[in-house]
Image (cartoon, rainbow, N blue to C red; front, top):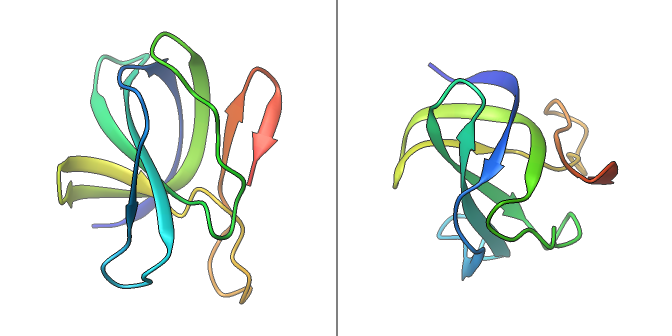
Length: 100
């Protein structure tokens, strides 16, 4: 089941970039270890939101839609505003700056 979540954690991998198979837009993905010890992949559409310049060890707070069975395991996506206004907006907070 998909649900909106708000989690904080530590960035565990350098970001990688790819074109989404559905949107064909550039995406940024990186892994975090949540404060509860769970590993999650964060996927952000950087055609909509600005790139978030994370690096391993950074602390982030992420709001988005949780998918328990993403392509690389549990993930959070929709970490940006919805330009169509049909989906709840999300964000990535890095050092007090919101990337949405």
